[in-house]
Every structure is written in structure tokens, then in C-alpha cells.
Image 1 (cartoon, rainbow, N blue to C red):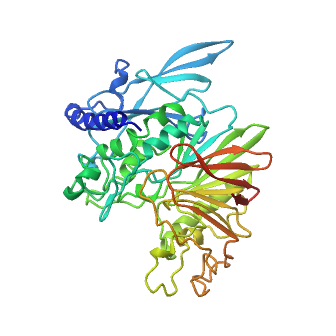
Image 2: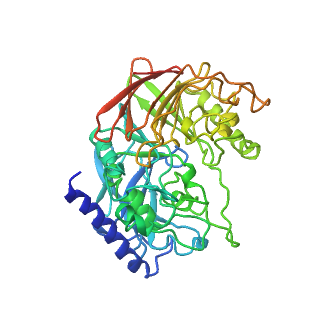
Image 3: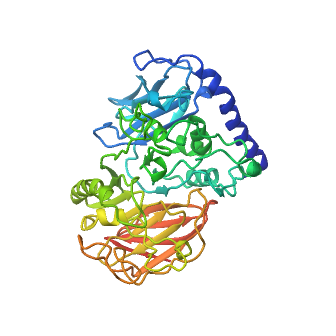
Length: 491
């Protein structure tokens, strides 16, 4: 990325931060007020199409727009098939608002939404084009996760350097690959504190969290962490999203449910109680089908694993997660091909450098609560996709579907070494002592491949299964994985 491009991005963020609060001083219209078709394209902070289940929108897409809070909702302009020709229609968008108990964190932005009409061939919001339809057949799927710039404690990322925080570069490379749809595996938001004065060269100008509320995100944090760097991707392809632990209600959950949750009526799900406490939320399990060339159908089954414990089994959280995996198993069973999408991995390892010293019985297997909650319910999947770890990893355990971890889109990377195959499986400690007797033990992996570098994956259908190209931020392939019928092999 050129220095000029860096300065343009910085100026765009600064302009948003300086202008939107002033616009927000004007009262934003209520959802019942009429839409405004006159809003120019330059007034739109972001516009995008979310992949949703058919019971949310028959077209499979939900159109969203983010605008300054002082404006009204624009209209969704669409060209749709009509008989043997085309006709243009205008669809009223309705407002989607954060809860009042979020105080001033989100009032500067207005979010508007509408179902994309069936048969749409083109669509735009205030002159800004967005994807109008799900692809007739899917030939390329982009996969990425854990994208935000970390500012927390001693972990201060160079948010002002696109090489050190390469989300914008990743977004550009994904668009250049021309995928039909993108899967985002969770963790948009990482700006959990103000940039320390001593680190101004790294993250100076980053929006700080609002004080006095039990969460860390804000409208300006989302503009900086998501809407500016991901702008090229929003216009180019539909986005299928799941929630990560950085979208818990104590972190970035209010923004997630306002901007990206793929359902109506959920924008206030993370709003604090009147007493100021953040709620605990579990989103329902959902699935969508993608038509694949050759008459195949791929079902994407999504389980919300934002809540969880990585290094132990939490029985309370597991009891809430278990029904989500039961429902996911039910939805997966009717599919010819099915992938499980869940933020916290089912089978993955962290670096041994993160273990205590001496490590004792500690194990490098992670997301243990998620592993326990899903036990016995994974037989219907051909592949599992997750993120959470800031790396790319491919794991194959005998008797379980292979898993690809892709949490390397932009957040500060994990340790570069220490990813050996543990001697015992995920539900035992380092000495082989079971962590639980409530479910059968799981054998250790027959293969674990790990790449600690930024990038994303591009999946294409093969004669049997799928080929995943793991790519760096410049789009260059650094590894290839072949997944099919539960088996995963990488080279």
C-alpha cells in the first residue's frame, strides 16, 4: 500500500470522527418515519449485504447501511427481474438502533436495513452499489477472521501501519480473488482501551472506549476497526458472519448486534441492564445453503461460541452451548455437504510458550468448553471452520471432521513456534488424565499444521470435497489444504 493510500485511509477515519458527532446532535428519525432517498453516496459510512437464512429474507440477503445519526434512512434501489424484462423498485429501509443504556456510544450513527428483493440483479443505497443476489452457483469462497487491531494492556498493535495491521491489504486481496461470498469467523473488534500516550506512533488517533459502561466498543471504534479497512469488500460480495468472543456483551457486542447480526430485532441484545450490567447472550443456531457447481449443495451451519472457556471445562457455559450443538447436528444431518462454522475451535492447539512454567498438567488444546459441549455431535460435518487463534492451523483427529482455523486477518499474531501434537487428546491433561468422565475421550491428532502469518483462505470445489488455498495479505498462496468427507490434508 502506498503512503498516499495510507494517508487517504487516515483522513477518511479522521473525517468520520470529526463530522459524525456534529451530525448526531440533530435528532435521528424514528423507525416509523419515512426514508430519505436524497442522501448522497458520500453520506453513507458503509453499505453491505449480509447472508441470512431464508426465514429472515427469501432472497438470502439482508441489506444494511450505516449513516450519520442526523440523517434519515435512505431507500434501497433495486433492479429486479419482471417477466421477460427488468424493472426498478425502491424498498423502504427501517432503522436499527442500539439500546438507550449504551448511552452515547452509538448515537452518532444510524443503521438501516431491508430485505433484498428476490430476483434482484443490481442494488444500491444512496448511490452506493452493494451485492444484489446470492450467486447462482458458488465457485469461490473467501474465509477469514480475527481482523481488528489490538489495543489492550501491553499488547499494542501498530494500527497506523497497514503492514503491521494488514486488514485493509487482506480486504483488497480478497476482492481481487473475486470470490462469490465471504465467511467471517468472528472477532471484528479489538480496540478495548485508549491508545497509550507512549504508543502514539503506533495507534495515535484510535477512538477510545466510552467510560462508565460495561463494554468497550463505540461507533468510532467500529468505523476505525471495520468500516474503513473493509470498505472494498462490502461493495464486492455478500458477507456471512458469525460472532466471536470479542463480540461478547462486555466487549464489542453492542456494535456487533447493531451492525452485523444477521437477524431482525436483535440490535439491542447486548444493551446493559438499567443497573449497568452487561447481559450474557447466546445466538440461535442457523444454517444457509449454497448452490455449488455440479449440482452440489453446501450447508453452512453456524454455532455461536462467543461464550466459552479455553483452558478448562466450564459446566455452566457448556450446558448453554450443548443445545446449540444439538440443533446444529440436526440441521447438518439433512445436507449433502455440511461445514460447521463456530468461532472457538473444537480441535486446535495454542503455542506451548503460553503454558505456565513449569507447565505441569496444562495442555495446549484450547477451547475445551467448546470441545466438551460438542462431543458426539460432529458426525454430520465434512469440515469445521473456526478462528479465535491468531494464526492459520489445520487439525485432523481420527474419527472427527478436519478443522481449519483462520484467525489471521489482522489481529496481533500468536507466538511463532510451539505447536507440536500433544501426546493425549483434547479432553485429557498433559499426563493423560481425563478432564471429564461425562463424555468419551478423544484421541490426539494425527496431523497438525500451523502457519503464523497474516492472510485468509480461498476455497474452491474439487471433484471430491474442497481445496483451500491459504494466502498471505498480498494474495500469494503459502499452503494448500484438501478437505473432503471429514478428511483434511495440507501441503
